[in-house]
Structure formats: C-alpha cells, structure tokens
Image (cartoon, rainbow, N blue to C red; front, side, top):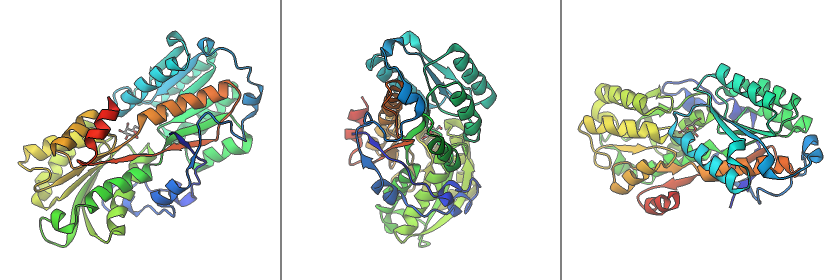
Length: 373
Ligand code: GAL
C-alpha cells in the first residue's frame, strides 16, 4: 500500500550538514528520528484527492491519458538505482494508459545546465506534466518558477527540494509536489542491521567500540547526509560507542566506492570493522576491495548498503554482504506517476508524498528478491 504524508520537516533537519569527514555529516542535528517520521505517515490511497489541490488542477479538463504528453528528467542515466526507477516509471505510465510515444525520458548527464535546457525544451513542446529528478537540488526554485509560469504541473522525484522551496508550493497553492522516501529511515535501518549483531560479534579489535568507515553518495541528494547521520545514530542510540576511521564521498558510484574502500583498508587495515555505504553500487565496489584485501564479510568485517539492487540482495543471501535497505523504486515511480495523473485529472496532490524503506538481511533477502522479480 502506498503511503502519502505531508512531511513535517524541521529547519534543523533540512539544515543537515553536507560536511564530509568523520564527525562531519554525523554532526548534523535533527529533532525527528526516522521512527517519528514514520509515525507521521498516513496510510491513504495515492489516488485520493488532496484538499489543497492547486488552481490548475481545479481547472484541469481531464481527458484521455493516451493523448497526454509526459516529460521526465533523470539526473543521470548512468545510475543503477535511477535506471530501475525510470524503467518502472515508464512501465507504469503505459499501464495507466499513457502512449509510449508520448513519454519522453531524458538524461541530464549529471549536469544542471543540460537538464535546464531539457526542461526548456519540454516547456516549448507543451508537455502536459513534468516529472523531474533534479541534478542540483539547489536549482529547485528556478525550475519550479519556470514550470509553474508555463502552467505545467510538476512532480519532483528522488532529490528532495528543501523546506523553504516546499513551503512556496503550499503558500502559492501550486501544482508541485515531491514523491520519495525518508532517507533517515534507511540510515536508521543500516545502523540497526549492525547493532543487531551485537558488540561481541562486531568488535574484532576488542577496543569496545564499533570502528567504521563511511562511503557517502552525492551531497546534492539529501539522502547522502541523512543515511550518513542516521546509520551512526542508530548505533549510538542502541548504546554502542562508535569510532569513525574514515568518511569519503563516493558519488553513488561503484568504481569510486571500490577506490575509496581500498584506500581506507590499506590505511586502517584490520581496525575497520564496518563499512557503511550510502548505496548499493558503492557497496558492490566496497566488496571488491574487501575481497582483494583478503578480508571476509561476516567473518572479519561487515558491509551494508541501501537500494536492494538484485545483485546485492543475492550477495546478502550468499552471506557476502551483511545487509541492505530496499529503496522502493516501485512505490516511488508508481507514486510519481499517480501524482502526475492526479494533476491531469484535476484531483490534485499533497505537496509531499512519502513511502517506506524495508530492512534487508539474510532473514528476509529471499522474500525481497522474489518481490523484485
Ligand atoms: C538514492 C539512491 C542512490 C542514487 C541516488 C541518486 O536514493 O539510493 O543509489 O540513485 O538516489 O540521487
């Protein structure tokens, strides 16, 4: 069941530090842990009309979805998770009645100037709705202004614009929303996967602490800061002492993840007990370096990621990766498409629509794998 909610985001959460280095991101303050955020979710059909549907929605004429043009901007095609996301988005849009030739999905190539040009082209082409995965979250206000000025409803995905920007959508009653998951929850689940092993199992060097390295994603996505902060917070909340040996930015990339973990392993060697990766692509890279260094996950080191890529879930089953967190691309893609449809048929949407992550360990990995296929 898809869940929607108006996220109550405090200024302190959205001011989460983008600093990297041990004690950098983890120092970001937050007053609402993932569990509380989860309690704020309201189970509700995504199709349900919102009370604050915007003006354009109220005037929408509806019509046959097969005639509607959808423009989709993805920040970068060369991203494993966003590849799954866009595949599901296209599949579901067609299932809902859109014509394949009316769905245009473009690659921002991780360049905001390129993406801004693509948005201009979509506006010039007169698309009926836009679904945008920003390259730079900080460009949200500019993008929103031009899309709203063109009278096109807008659904942001994956890279959440900040609280001030979302407040503008509410204040102006614009047909603009964000669909995504709360990354604090994914970080919390990563930390819990390690905490559940217990100190005796993790503390190989017997210093009484959990010694870890952190491989972060692109700071342009708040997911990176939240996963970094909340994975460690889950350990300290569970009463463990932690020791950050290294904290590096791997940009969600497998090759970078492998390089960074290889460097850390040569510098800190057997003192590294846990490798936290903000996503699975980097965890796959980390695993290559862990194995090259002669270390064995589950025996003398632990490794966790986020996304639940099929390859990673298979490795969780095989015991080669400790765990991951399912970043539900089905719920997010379908939710984004449903939000687009709600704008087109005049039902409107809440401005912030959230879904849940799922913890993946050896216990439920087969079940998750089955659900992915
Ligand atoms: C995250 C995902 C990463 C990467 C990123 C792109 O939610 O876990 O793997 O796809 O989005 O912004």
